[in-house]
Length: 631
Image (cartoon, rainbow, N blue to C red):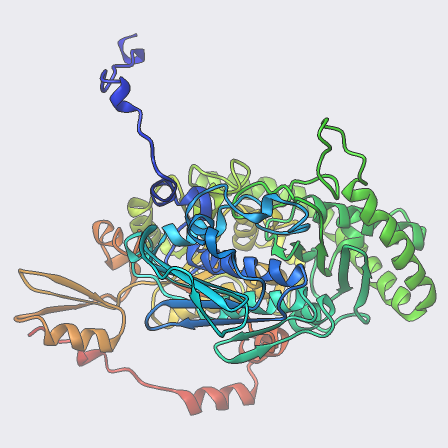
Protein backbone atom coordinates (compact mmCIF):
# COMPACT_ATOMS: atom_id res chain seq x y z
CA UNK A 1 0.00 0.00 0.00
CA UNK A 2 2.99 2.28 0.40
CA UNK A 3 3.03 2.89 -3.35
CA UNK A 4 -0.33 4.64 -3.02
CA UNK A 5 0.99 7.25 -0.58
CA UNK A 6 1.70 10.62 -2.19
CA UNK A 7 4.77 12.32 -0.76
CA UNK A 8 4.65 16.15 -0.92
CA UNK A 9 7.43 17.64 -3.01
CA UNK A 10 7.41 21.03 -1.27
CA UNK A 11 5.48 22.16 1.80
CA UNK A 12 6.29 25.86 1.38
CA UNK A 13 2.86 27.11 0.27
CA UNK A 14 2.28 30.56 1.80
CA UNK A 15 1.74 34.20 0.79
CA UNK A 16 5.02 34.20 -1.14
CA UNK A 17 3.61 31.49 -3.43
CA UNK A 18 0.89 33.83 -4.68
CA UNK A 19 2.28 35.67 -7.71
CA UNK A 20 0.61 38.45 -9.68
CA UNK A 21 1.54 38.70 -13.34
CA UNK A 22 0.99 41.86 -15.34
CA UNK A 23 -1.06 41.43 -18.53
CA UNK A 24 1.92 41.24 -20.89
CA UNK A 25 3.84 38.93 -18.56
CA UNK A 26 0.94 36.50 -18.38
CA UNK A 27 0.63 36.32 -22.17
CA UNK A 28 4.35 35.64 -22.54
CA UNK A 29 4.26 32.98 -19.82
CA UNK A 30 1.14 31.22 -21.19
CA UNK A 31 1.06 32.06 -24.94
CA UNK A 32 -0.94 28.91 -25.75
CA UNK A 33 -3.92 30.34 -23.90
CA UNK A 34 -4.05 33.21 -26.39
CA UNK A 35 -2.77 31.98 -29.75
CA UNK A 36 -2.88 28.17 -29.55
CA UNK A 37 0.45 26.58 -30.37
CA UNK A 38 3.66 28.47 -31.09
CA UNK A 39 5.29 26.51 -33.94
CA UNK A 40 7.95 27.69 -36.35
CA UNK A 41 5.74 28.72 -39.28
CA UNK A 42 5.73 25.36 -41.07
CA UNK A 43 2.06 24.80 -40.19
CA UNK A 44 -0.78 27.08 -41.31
CA UNK A 45 -2.11 27.30 -37.75
CA UNK A 46 1.21 28.22 -36.11
CA UNK A 47 1.18 31.21 -33.80
CA UNK A 48 2.92 33.70 -36.09
CA UNK A 49 -0.05 33.52 -38.49
CA UNK A 50 -2.47 34.03 -35.60
CA UNK A 51 -0.57 37.25 -34.82
CA UNK A 52 -1.01 38.44 -38.40
CA UNK A 53 -4.68 37.50 -38.30
CA UNK A 54 -5.37 39.35 -35.05
CA UNK A 55 -4.10 42.64 -36.46
CA UNK A 56 -5.88 42.27 -39.81
CA UNK A 57 -9.09 41.35 -37.95
CA UNK A 58 -9.05 44.79 -36.35
CA UNK A 59 -8.66 46.40 -39.76
CA UNK A 60 -11.52 44.29 -41.13
CA UNK A 61 -13.74 45.36 -38.23
CA UNK A 62 -13.15 48.98 -39.26
CA UNK A 63 -14.14 48.17 -42.84
CA UNK A 64 -17.23 46.26 -41.67
CA UNK A 65 -18.25 49.30 -39.64
CA UNK A 66 -18.07 51.45 -42.79
CA UNK A 67 -14.64 53.02 -42.42
CA UNK A 68 -11.78 52.42 -44.86
CA UNK A 69 -11.93 50.36 -48.03
CA UNK A 70 -8.24 49.51 -48.27
CA UNK A 71 -5.76 47.53 -46.17
CA UNK A 72 -2.03 47.30 -46.89
CA UNK A 73 -0.14 44.22 -45.68
CA UNK A 74 3.58 43.71 -46.06
CA UNK A 75 5.74 40.81 -44.88
CA UNK A 76 9.51 41.05 -45.10
CA UNK A 77 10.47 37.37 -45.13
CA UNK A 78 14.18 37.99 -44.53
CA UNK A 79 13.69 40.35 -41.58
CA UNK A 80 10.47 38.58 -40.44
CA UNK A 81 8.89 42.02 -40.12
CA UNK A 82 5.13 42.47 -40.59
CA UNK A 83 3.39 45.76 -41.38
CA UNK A 84 -0.39 46.26 -41.57
CA UNK A 85 -2.02 49.62 -42.35
CA UNK A 86 -5.76 50.27 -42.42
CA UNK A 87 -7.58 53.47 -43.31
CA UNK A 88 -10.35 53.39 -40.74
CA UNK A 89 -10.97 55.77 -37.87
CA UNK A 90 -7.68 55.16 -36.08
CA UNK A 91 -7.35 54.21 -32.43
CA UNK A 92 -8.33 57.12 -30.14
CA UNK A 93 -4.98 58.79 -29.47
CA UNK A 94 -5.38 59.17 -25.73
CA UNK A 95 -6.08 55.43 -25.30
CA UNK A 96 -3.53 53.99 -27.69
CA UNK A 97 -1.21 52.53 -25.02
CA UNK A 98 -4.03 50.88 -23.07
CA UNK A 99 -5.62 49.56 -26.27
CA UNK A 100 -2.56 47.47 -27.11
CA UNK A 101 -1.21 46.58 -23.67
CA UNK A 102 -4.05 46.19 -21.17
CA UNK A 103 -6.26 43.11 -21.35
CA UNK A 104 -10.02 43.55 -21.39
CA UNK A 105 -9.63 47.02 -22.83
CA UNK A 106 -11.13 48.02 -26.18
CA UNK A 107 -14.13 49.40 -28.05
CA UNK A 108 -15.44 45.95 -28.98
CA UNK A 109 -17.18 45.61 -25.64
CA UNK A 110 -19.51 48.33 -26.92
CA UNK A 111 -21.82 46.44 -29.30
CA UNK A 112 -23.02 49.74 -30.75
CA UNK A 113 -19.53 50.41 -32.09
CA UNK A 114 -18.69 46.89 -33.33
CA UNK A 115 -21.93 44.99 -33.98
CA UNK A 116 -20.53 41.82 -35.56
CA UNK A 117 -16.85 41.85 -34.78
CA UNK A 118 -14.52 38.85 -34.61
CA UNK A 119 -12.36 40.07 -31.75
CA UNK A 120 -14.73 40.51 -28.81
CA UNK A 121 -12.50 39.75 -25.86
CA UNK A 122 -9.96 42.59 -26.02
CA UNK A 123 -7.00 40.20 -26.33
CA UNK A 124 -5.82 40.04 -29.97
CA UNK A 125 -3.49 43.02 -30.42
CA UNK A 126 -2.26 42.73 -26.84
CA UNK A 127 -1.10 39.19 -27.60
CA UNK A 128 0.73 40.43 -30.70
CA UNK A 129 2.42 43.09 -28.62
CA UNK A 130 3.43 40.75 -25.80
CA UNK A 131 4.78 38.05 -28.13
CA UNK A 132 6.84 40.38 -30.35
CA UNK A 133 10.44 41.51 -29.88
CA UNK A 134 9.41 44.73 -31.66
CA UNK A 135 5.89 46.15 -31.77
CA UNK A 136 4.81 49.55 -33.03
CA UNK A 137 1.38 51.10 -33.42
CA UNK A 138 0.66 54.47 -34.99
CA UNK A 139 -2.83 55.97 -35.02
CA UNK A 140 -3.86 58.89 -37.22
CA UNK A 141 -7.01 60.85 -36.47
CA UNK A 142 -8.09 64.15 -38.02
CA UNK A 143 -4.70 65.74 -38.62
CA UNK A 144 -3.00 64.33 -35.52
CA UNK A 145 -1.07 61.13 -34.80
CA UNK A 146 0.60 59.24 -32.00
CA UNK A 147 3.16 56.41 -32.20
CA UNK A 148 4.13 54.02 -29.45
CA UNK A 149 6.71 51.22 -29.51
CA UNK A 150 7.15 48.17 -27.31
CA UNK A 151 9.67 45.37 -26.82
CA UNK A 152 8.33 42.10 -25.37
CA UNK A 153 5.23 43.99 -24.26
CA UNK A 154 7.11 46.77 -22.47
CA UNK A 155 6.71 50.37 -23.60
CA UNK A 156 9.95 51.78 -25.04
CA UNK A 157 8.83 54.90 -26.93
CA UNK A 158 5.87 57.30 -26.98
CA UNK A 159 5.88 60.11 -29.51
CA UNK A 160 3.00 61.92 -27.87
CA UNK A 161 0.31 63.58 -29.96
CA UNK A 162 1.81 65.43 -32.94
CA UNK A 163 0.44 67.06 -36.13
CA UNK A 164 0.12 64.70 -39.12
CA UNK A 165 -1.00 65.01 -42.74
CA UNK A 166 -1.59 61.27 -43.37
CA UNK A 167 -4.97 59.65 -43.95
CA UNK A 168 -6.86 58.48 -40.89
CA UNK A 169 -6.22 54.90 -39.81
CA UNK A 170 -3.91 52.64 -37.86
CA UNK A 171 -0.47 51.24 -38.69
CA UNK A 172 0.81 48.19 -36.80
CA UNK A 173 4.31 46.79 -37.23
CA UNK A 174 5.78 43.82 -35.39
CA UNK A 175 8.47 41.14 -35.36
CA UNK A 176 7.48 37.89 -33.57
CA UNK A 177 9.90 37.15 -30.74
CA UNK A 178 12.40 34.42 -31.65
CA UNK A 179 12.86 33.72 -27.93
CA UNK A 180 9.36 32.25 -28.02
CA UNK A 181 8.93 31.09 -31.62
CA UNK A 182 12.48 29.86 -32.20
CA UNK A 183 13.98 29.92 -35.68
CA UNK A 184 10.62 30.59 -37.33
CA UNK A 185 9.81 31.55 -40.91
CA UNK A 186 6.76 32.84 -42.77
CA UNK A 187 5.38 30.72 -45.61
CA UNK A 188 4.08 33.00 -48.34
CA UNK A 189 1.26 30.63 -49.36
CA UNK A 190 -0.20 30.64 -45.84
CA UNK A 191 -0.26 34.42 -45.64
CA UNK A 192 -1.64 34.75 -49.17
CA UNK A 193 -4.45 32.26 -48.43
CA UNK A 194 -5.53 34.37 -45.47
CA UNK A 195 -5.44 37.54 -47.58
CA UNK A 196 -7.63 35.91 -50.24
CA UNK A 197 -10.12 34.80 -47.60
CA UNK A 198 -10.41 38.35 -46.32
CA UNK A 199 -11.08 39.52 -49.88
CA UNK A 200 -13.71 36.84 -50.53
CA UNK A 201 -15.53 37.62 -47.30
CA UNK A 202 -15.52 41.39 -47.64
CA UNK A 203 -16.74 42.49 -51.03
CA UNK A 204 -15.81 46.09 -51.70
CA UNK A 205 -12.56 45.78 -49.75
CA UNK A 206 -9.21 45.97 -51.53
CA UNK A 207 -6.15 44.43 -49.90
CA UNK A 208 -2.58 44.93 -51.03
CA UNK A 209 -0.20 42.19 -49.95
CA UNK A 210 3.43 42.96 -50.78
CA UNK A 211 2.11 45.36 -53.47
CA UNK A 212 -0.15 42.80 -55.15
CA UNK A 213 -3.86 43.64 -55.26
CA UNK A 214 -6.47 41.24 -53.84
CA UNK A 215 -10.12 41.91 -54.57
CA UNK A 216 -13.24 39.76 -54.95
CA UNK A 217 -16.32 40.78 -56.90
CA UNK A 218 -18.47 37.73 -56.16
CA UNK A 219 -17.58 36.80 -52.58
CA UNK A 220 -17.82 33.14 -51.63
CA UNK A 221 -18.70 32.25 -55.21
CA UNK A 222 -15.18 33.32 -56.15
CA UNK A 223 -13.69 31.45 -53.18
CA UNK A 224 -15.26 28.15 -54.18
CA UNK A 225 -14.61 28.61 -57.89
CA UNK A 226 -10.92 29.31 -57.26
CA UNK A 227 -10.43 26.42 -54.83
CA UNK A 228 -12.25 23.48 -56.43
CA UNK A 229 -9.82 20.61 -56.98
CA UNK A 230 -12.10 18.85 -59.51
CA UNK A 231 -14.66 19.92 -62.07
CA UNK A 232 -18.07 20.61 -60.51
CA UNK A 233 -20.90 18.26 -61.49
CA UNK A 234 -23.22 21.22 -61.89
CA UNK A 235 -22.84 25.05 -61.76
CA UNK A 236 -22.08 26.42 -58.31
CA UNK A 237 -25.24 27.34 -56.41
CA UNK A 238 -24.90 30.70 -54.66
CA UNK A 239 -27.22 31.96 -51.92
CA UNK A 240 -26.97 35.24 -50.00
CA UNK A 241 -29.61 36.55 -47.67
CA UNK A 242 -29.08 38.87 -44.73
CA UNK A 243 -26.23 37.55 -42.61
CA UNK A 244 -26.03 34.22 -44.44
CA UNK A 245 -23.90 33.47 -47.51
CA UNK A 246 -23.07 30.13 -49.10
CA UNK A 247 -21.75 28.71 -52.37
CA UNK A 248 -21.77 24.96 -53.00
CA UNK A 249 -21.67 22.18 -55.57
CA UNK A 250 -20.79 18.48 -55.83
CA UNK A 251 -17.57 17.23 -57.37
CA UNK A 252 -16.67 13.84 -58.79
CA UNK A 253 -14.34 11.49 -56.99
CA UNK A 254 -15.01 12.73 -53.46
CA UNK A 255 -16.97 10.72 -50.89
CA UNK A 256 -17.32 13.17 -48.02
CA UNK A 257 -18.50 16.76 -47.73
CA UNK A 258 -15.97 19.52 -47.22
CA UNK A 259 -16.38 23.10 -46.00
CA UNK A 260 -14.69 26.46 -46.05
CA UNK A 261 -16.64 27.87 -43.12
CA UNK A 262 -16.49 31.32 -41.55
CA UNK A 263 -18.14 33.35 -38.81
CA UNK A 264 -17.89 37.13 -39.01
CA UNK A 265 -14.90 36.65 -41.30
CA UNK A 266 -13.13 34.21 -38.97
CA UNK A 267 -12.09 30.96 -40.67
CA UNK A 268 -13.62 28.29 -38.45
CA UNK A 269 -11.40 25.40 -39.49
CA UNK A 270 -12.92 23.19 -36.78
CA UNK A 271 -16.46 23.98 -37.95
CA UNK A 272 -19.02 24.41 -35.20
CA UNK A 273 -22.74 25.01 -34.78
CA UNK A 274 -23.17 26.97 -38.02
CA UNK A 275 -21.53 24.24 -40.10
CA UNK A 276 -23.53 21.51 -38.38
CA UNK A 277 -26.72 23.51 -38.98
CA UNK A 278 -25.95 23.84 -42.69
CA UNK A 279 -25.12 20.13 -43.08
CA UNK A 280 -28.37 19.11 -41.42
CA UNK A 281 -30.48 21.66 -43.31
CA UNK A 282 -28.93 20.85 -46.70
CA UNK A 283 -29.58 17.11 -46.36
CA UNK A 284 -33.15 17.75 -45.21
CA UNK A 285 -34.05 20.14 -48.06
CA UNK A 286 -32.54 17.89 -50.76
CA UNK A 287 -34.16 14.79 -49.26
CA UNK A 288 -37.57 16.48 -49.37
CA UNK A 289 -36.93 17.56 -52.97
CA UNK A 290 -35.86 14.16 -54.37
CA UNK A 291 -38.48 12.36 -52.23
CA UNK A 292 -36.13 9.46 -51.44
CA UNK A 293 -35.16 8.32 -47.98
CA UNK A 294 -31.39 8.47 -48.43
CA UNK A 295 -29.07 8.91 -45.44
CA UNK A 296 -27.73 12.48 -44.94
CA UNK A 297 -24.13 11.40 -45.61
CA UNK A 298 -25.20 9.89 -48.96
CA UNK A 299 -26.85 13.17 -49.98
CA UNK A 300 -23.84 15.22 -48.93
CA UNK A 301 -21.15 12.89 -50.32
CA UNK A 302 -18.95 14.94 -52.64
CA UNK A 303 -20.44 18.29 -51.56
CA UNK A 304 -17.99 21.19 -51.36
CA UNK A 305 -19.29 24.34 -49.70
CA UNK A 306 -18.09 27.81 -48.76
CA UNK A 307 -20.21 29.11 -45.89
CA UNK A 308 -20.31 32.29 -43.84
CA UNK A 309 -22.68 33.59 -41.18
CA UNK A 310 -22.50 36.88 -39.31
CA UNK A 311 -23.88 36.92 -35.80
CA UNK A 312 -23.75 39.25 -32.83
CA UNK A 313 -21.17 38.46 -30.16
CA UNK A 314 -20.26 34.96 -31.37
CA UNK A 315 -19.13 32.44 -28.77
CA UNK A 316 -16.08 30.42 -29.83
CA UNK A 317 -14.67 27.40 -28.06
CA UNK A 318 -11.18 28.90 -27.74
CA UNK A 319 -9.25 32.13 -28.15
CA UNK A 320 -8.05 30.92 -31.56
CA UNK A 321 -11.72 30.96 -32.67
CA UNK A 322 -11.57 27.84 -34.84
CA UNK A 323 -14.91 26.38 -33.73
CA UNK A 324 -18.21 28.19 -33.16
CA UNK A 325 -20.28 27.36 -30.10
CA UNK A 326 -23.17 29.84 -30.48
CA UNK A 327 -26.65 28.36 -30.83
CA UNK A 328 -28.52 31.61 -31.63
CA UNK A 329 -27.83 34.45 -34.07
CA UNK A 330 -27.71 36.96 -31.19
CA UNK A 331 -26.50 36.71 -27.56
CA UNK A 332 -28.68 35.99 -24.55
CA UNK A 333 -30.73 38.73 -22.94
CA UNK A 334 -29.73 40.08 -19.56
CA UNK A 335 -32.09 37.63 -17.84
CA UNK A 336 -30.55 34.63 -19.60
CA UNK A 337 -33.36 34.16 -22.09
CA UNK A 338 -32.86 34.36 -25.86
CA UNK A 339 -35.62 35.45 -28.22
CA UNK A 340 -33.38 35.52 -31.32
CA UNK A 341 -33.75 32.69 -33.88
CA UNK A 342 -31.86 29.46 -33.38
CA UNK A 343 -28.93 29.29 -35.75
CA UNK A 344 -30.13 25.97 -37.21
CA UNK A 345 -33.68 27.31 -37.71
CA UNK A 346 -32.35 30.47 -39.37
CA UNK A 347 -30.20 28.49 -41.85
CA UNK A 348 -32.90 25.89 -42.53
CA UNK A 349 -35.48 28.56 -43.39
CA UNK A 350 -33.10 30.21 -45.87
CA UNK A 351 -32.23 26.92 -47.60
CA UNK A 352 -35.90 25.92 -47.78
CA UNK A 353 -36.69 29.07 -49.70
CA UNK A 354 -33.67 29.36 -51.98
CA UNK A 355 -32.32 25.84 -52.58
CA UNK A 356 -35.70 24.21 -53.13
CA UNK A 357 -36.69 26.93 -55.62
CA UNK A 358 -33.35 26.65 -57.41
CA UNK A 359 -33.67 22.91 -57.91
CA UNK A 360 -37.21 23.23 -59.24
CA UNK A 361 -36.13 25.89 -61.74
CA UNK A 362 -32.82 24.30 -62.85
CA UNK A 363 -33.73 20.79 -63.98
CA UNK A 364 -30.22 20.01 -65.29
CA UNK A 365 -28.69 20.73 -61.89
CA UNK A 366 -31.33 18.64 -60.11
CA UNK A 367 -30.66 15.74 -62.50
CA UNK A 368 -26.88 15.91 -61.98
CA UNK A 369 -27.35 16.10 -58.22
CA UNK A 370 -29.64 13.07 -58.18
CA UNK A 371 -27.18 11.09 -60.33
CA UNK A 372 -24.38 11.84 -57.84
CA UNK A 373 -26.56 10.85 -54.88
CA UNK A 374 -27.54 7.57 -56.59
CA UNK A 375 -23.85 6.85 -57.25
CA UNK A 376 -23.06 7.58 -53.61
CA UNK A 377 -25.78 5.17 -52.50
CA UNK A 378 -24.46 2.43 -54.76
CA UNK A 379 -20.95 2.88 -53.39
CA UNK A 380 -22.28 2.90 -49.83
CA UNK A 381 -23.95 -0.46 -50.41
CA UNK A 382 -20.81 -1.87 -52.02
CA UNK A 383 -18.72 -0.79 -49.03
CA UNK A 384 -21.23 -1.65 -46.30
CA UNK A 385 -20.76 -5.38 -46.79
CA UNK A 386 -17.04 -5.34 -46.06
CA UNK A 387 -16.65 -2.21 -43.94
CA UNK A 388 -17.36 -3.81 -40.58
CA UNK A 389 -15.22 -6.83 -41.35
CA UNK A 390 -12.38 -4.59 -42.55
CA UNK A 391 -12.49 -2.47 -39.42
CA UNK A 392 -12.38 -5.49 -37.12
CA UNK A 393 -9.54 -7.00 -39.14
CA UNK A 394 -7.76 -3.66 -39.00
CA UNK A 395 -8.01 -3.44 -35.21
CA UNK A 396 -6.73 -7.00 -34.82
CA UNK A 397 -3.85 -6.50 -37.25
CA UNK A 398 -2.90 -3.23 -35.64
CA UNK A 399 -2.75 -4.79 -32.19
CA UNK A 400 -0.84 -7.85 -33.38
CA UNK A 401 1.65 -5.99 -35.55
CA UNK A 402 1.94 -2.85 -33.42
CA UNK A 403 1.63 -0.80 -36.60
CA UNK A 404 0.19 2.17 -34.69
CA UNK A 405 1.97 3.44 -31.62
CA UNK A 406 -0.48 6.05 -30.44
CA UNK A 407 0.06 9.21 -28.42
CA UNK A 408 -1.77 10.12 -25.23
CA UNK A 409 -3.62 13.22 -26.48
CA UNK A 410 -6.50 12.62 -28.86
CA UNK A 411 -8.79 14.81 -30.93
CA UNK A 412 -11.88 14.42 -28.75
CA UNK A 413 -10.01 15.21 -25.55
CA UNK A 414 -9.52 18.91 -26.20
CA UNK A 415 -9.66 20.78 -29.49
CA UNK A 416 -6.86 23.16 -28.57
CA UNK A 417 -4.47 20.44 -27.36
CA UNK A 418 -5.05 18.56 -30.61
CA UNK A 419 -3.09 21.32 -32.37
CA UNK A 420 0.06 19.76 -30.94
CA UNK A 421 -0.58 16.18 -32.08
CA UNK A 422 1.45 14.58 -34.86
CA UNK A 423 1.50 11.17 -36.50
CA UNK A 424 4.62 10.02 -38.36
CA UNK A 425 4.03 7.60 -41.23
CA UNK A 426 7.25 5.63 -41.58
CA UNK A 427 8.61 2.81 -43.72
CA UNK A 428 10.01 -0.32 -42.11
CA UNK A 429 10.71 -1.38 -38.56
CA UNK A 430 14.10 0.29 -38.17
CA UNK A 431 12.87 3.79 -39.01
CA UNK A 432 9.70 3.45 -36.96
CA UNK A 433 11.76 2.05 -34.09
CA UNK A 434 14.08 5.06 -34.04
CA UNK A 435 11.19 7.54 -34.12
CA UNK A 436 9.21 5.57 -31.52
CA UNK A 437 12.12 5.67 -29.06
CA UNK A 438 12.72 9.39 -29.72
CA UNK A 439 9.17 10.75 -29.83
CA UNK A 440 7.16 12.71 -27.30
CA UNK A 441 4.64 10.02 -26.28
CA UNK A 442 2.11 12.66 -25.20
CA UNK A 443 1.72 14.26 -28.62
CA UNK A 444 3.50 12.12 -31.25
CA UNK A 445 2.23 8.86 -32.72
CA UNK A 446 3.97 6.51 -35.18
CA UNK A 447 2.40 4.41 -37.95
CA UNK A 448 4.68 1.85 -39.55
CA UNK A 449 4.20 0.80 -43.18
CA UNK A 450 5.18 -2.69 -44.26
CA UNK A 451 6.76 -2.23 -47.64
CA UNK A 452 5.29 0.00 -50.32
CA UNK A 453 1.57 0.78 -50.20
CA UNK A 454 -0.55 -0.02 -53.24
CA UNK A 455 -0.81 2.42 -56.13
CA UNK A 456 -4.49 3.38 -55.90
CA UNK A 457 -4.83 5.28 -59.17
CA UNK A 458 -7.22 2.73 -60.67
CA UNK A 459 -8.92 1.26 -57.61
CA UNK A 460 -12.29 2.20 -56.11
CA UNK A 461 -12.94 3.25 -52.51
CA UNK A 462 -14.27 -0.23 -51.74
CA UNK A 463 -10.81 -1.65 -52.55
CA UNK A 464 -9.26 0.47 -49.80
CA UNK A 465 -11.06 -1.68 -47.23
CA UNK A 466 -9.75 -4.84 -48.87
CA UNK A 467 -6.14 -3.65 -48.72
CA UNK A 468 -4.78 -4.21 -45.21
CA UNK A 469 -2.18 -1.44 -45.36
CA UNK A 470 -4.51 1.30 -46.62
CA UNK A 471 -7.36 0.13 -44.41
CA UNK A 472 -5.14 0.32 -41.33
CA UNK A 473 -3.88 3.77 -42.33
CA UNK A 474 -7.21 5.49 -42.83
CA UNK A 475 -8.54 3.85 -39.64
CA UNK A 476 -5.53 5.15 -37.72
CA UNK A 477 -6.20 8.68 -38.99
CA UNK A 478 -9.99 8.25 -38.51
CA UNK A 479 -10.74 10.02 -41.80
CA UNK A 480 -13.15 7.48 -43.26
CA UNK A 481 -16.10 9.82 -42.69
CA UNK A 482 -14.21 13.04 -43.46
CA UNK A 483 -11.52 15.03 -41.68
CA UNK A 484 -13.77 16.38 -38.92
CA UNK A 485 -12.70 13.40 -36.77
CA UNK A 486 -9.04 13.53 -37.79
CA UNK A 487 -7.12 12.22 -34.77
CA UNK A 488 -3.91 14.16 -35.41
CA UNK A 489 -3.41 17.74 -36.52
CA UNK A 490 -0.15 17.02 -38.34
CA UNK A 491 0.18 14.03 -40.66
CA UNK A 492 3.90 13.71 -41.38
CA UNK A 493 5.31 11.44 -44.07
CA UNK A 494 8.71 10.28 -42.82
CA UNK A 495 10.47 8.26 -45.52
CA UNK A 496 14.08 7.84 -46.57
CA UNK A 497 15.53 10.39 -48.94
CA UNK A 498 16.34 7.73 -51.56
CA UNK A 499 14.47 6.44 -54.61
CA UNK A 500 12.37 3.94 -52.66
CA UNK A 501 11.54 6.52 -50.01
CA UNK A 502 10.47 9.05 -52.63
CA UNK A 503 8.29 6.42 -54.32
CA UNK A 504 6.55 5.60 -51.04
CA UNK A 505 6.02 9.32 -50.47
CA UNK A 506 4.36 9.65 -53.88
CA UNK A 507 2.17 6.60 -53.26
CA UNK A 508 0.93 8.06 -49.97
CA UNK A 509 0.27 11.46 -51.52
CA UNK A 510 -1.61 9.75 -54.34
CA UNK A 511 -3.76 7.94 -51.78
CA UNK A 512 -4.60 11.17 -49.96
CA UNK A 513 -5.20 13.20 -53.11
CA UNK A 514 -7.42 10.55 -54.64
CA UNK A 515 -9.68 9.77 -51.68
CA UNK A 516 -9.03 12.46 -49.05
CA UNK A 517 -7.91 15.64 -50.89
CA UNK A 518 -9.34 17.79 -48.08
CA UNK A 519 -6.64 16.39 -45.79
CA UNK A 520 -4.06 18.18 -47.92
CA UNK A 521 -6.08 21.24 -48.92
CA UNK A 522 -6.74 21.90 -45.21
CA UNK A 523 -3.00 21.96 -44.51
CA UNK A 524 -2.58 18.81 -42.43
CA UNK A 525 0.05 16.92 -44.49
CA UNK A 526 3.81 17.47 -44.25
CA UNK A 527 7.08 15.91 -45.34
CA UNK A 528 9.65 15.36 -42.59
CA UNK A 529 13.06 16.72 -43.44
CA UNK A 530 15.88 14.77 -41.85
CA UNK A 531 19.59 15.50 -42.30
CA UNK A 532 21.46 13.91 -45.16
CA UNK A 533 24.87 14.46 -43.56
CA UNK A 534 26.55 14.74 -40.19
CA UNK A 535 29.76 16.80 -40.04
CA UNK A 536 31.61 16.61 -36.73
CA UNK A 537 34.87 16.72 -34.87
CA UNK A 538 35.65 16.49 -31.16
CA UNK A 539 34.38 20.01 -30.51
CA UNK A 540 31.06 20.17 -32.38
CA UNK A 541 28.53 18.33 -34.52
CA UNK A 542 26.62 19.89 -37.42
CA UNK A 543 23.67 18.25 -39.17
CA UNK A 544 23.27 19.19 -42.82
CA UNK A 545 20.08 18.91 -44.87
CA UNK A 546 21.57 19.85 -48.25
CA UNK A 547 24.87 19.58 -50.11
CA UNK A 548 25.29 23.33 -49.70
CA UNK A 549 25.01 23.03 -45.91
CA UNK A 550 27.50 20.13 -45.97
CA UNK A 551 30.07 22.12 -47.92
CA UNK A 552 29.67 25.12 -45.59
CA UNK A 553 29.99 22.90 -42.49
CA UNK A 554 33.18 21.27 -43.81
CA UNK A 555 34.70 24.73 -44.34
CA UNK A 556 34.01 25.60 -40.69
CA UNK A 557 35.04 22.27 -39.16
CA UNK A 558 38.66 21.19 -38.91
CA UNK A 559 39.48 17.47 -39.14
CA UNK A 560 35.86 16.81 -40.02
CA UNK A 561 34.29 13.39 -40.08
CA UNK A 562 31.43 13.31 -42.60
CA UNK A 563 28.67 10.72 -42.41
CA UNK A 564 26.03 10.24 -45.08
CA UNK A 565 22.71 9.04 -43.65
CA UNK A 566 21.24 6.70 -46.26
CA UNK A 567 18.10 5.90 -44.28
CA UNK A 568 16.17 6.96 -41.21
CA UNK A 569 16.98 3.64 -39.57
CA UNK A 570 20.67 4.60 -39.55
CA UNK A 571 20.00 7.56 -37.28
CA UNK A 572 20.17 6.60 -33.61
CA UNK A 573 17.22 7.39 -31.34
CA UNK A 574 19.35 9.85 -29.36
CA UNK A 575 20.12 11.76 -32.54
CA UNK A 576 16.55 11.51 -33.81
CA UNK A 577 15.37 13.58 -30.84
CA UNK A 578 17.05 16.56 -32.48
CA UNK A 579 14.99 16.17 -35.64
CA UNK A 580 11.46 15.61 -34.31
CA UNK A 581 11.57 17.99 -31.36
CA UNK A 582 11.00 21.74 -31.19
CA UNK A 583 13.40 22.31 -34.11
CA UNK A 584 11.70 19.75 -36.37
CA UNK A 585 11.83 20.72 -40.05
CA UNK A 586 8.59 20.13 -41.92
CA UNK A 587 7.79 20.93 -45.54
CA UNK A 588 4.05 21.52 -45.93
CA UNK A 589 2.31 19.85 -48.88
CA UNK A 590 0.53 22.74 -50.56
CA UNK A 591 -2.07 22.78 -53.31
CA UNK A 592 -2.19 25.84 -55.51
CA UNK A 593 -5.53 26.89 -56.96
CA UNK A 594 -4.41 25.97 -60.50
CA UNK A 595 -3.15 22.52 -59.45
CA UNK A 596 -4.75 19.83 -61.61
CA UNK A 597 -4.96 16.84 -59.24
CA UNK A 598 -6.40 14.41 -61.74
CA UNK A 599 -4.01 15.40 -64.51
CA UNK A 600 -0.89 15.27 -62.33
CA UNK A 601 -1.80 11.93 -60.76
CA UNK A 602 -2.63 10.40 -64.14
CA UNK A 603 0.70 11.56 -65.58
CA UNK A 604 2.94 10.46 -62.68
CA UNK A 605 1.02 7.52 -61.20
CA UNK A 606 -1.12 6.23 -64.07
CA UNK A 607 -0.19 3.91 -66.93
CA UNK A 608 3.46 3.88 -67.90
CA UNK A 609 3.06 5.97 -71.04
CA UNK A 610 5.70 6.90 -73.58
CA UNK A 611 5.19 10.53 -72.55
CA UNK A 612 6.18 9.79 -68.98
CA UNK A 613 9.16 7.67 -69.99
CA UNK A 614 10.36 10.55 -72.16
CA UNK A 615 9.95 12.96 -69.24
CA UNK A 616 12.00 10.69 -66.94
CA UNK A 617 14.81 10.31 -69.48
CA UNK A 618 14.93 14.08 -70.07
CA UNK A 619 15.15 14.81 -66.35
CA UNK A 620 17.31 11.91 -65.21
CA UNK A 621 20.19 12.88 -62.99
CA UNK A 622 22.81 10.40 -61.79
CA UNK A 623 24.13 11.03 -58.27
CA UNK A 624 27.74 10.29 -57.39
CA UNK A 625 27.67 8.14 -54.25
CA UNK A 626 31.48 8.29 -54.00
CA UNK A 627 31.50 12.03 -53.25
CA UNK A 628 31.42 11.51 -49.47
CA UNK A 629 34.89 11.42 -47.94
CA UNK A 630 36.37 11.69 -44.48
CA UNK A 631 38.86 14.52 -44.16
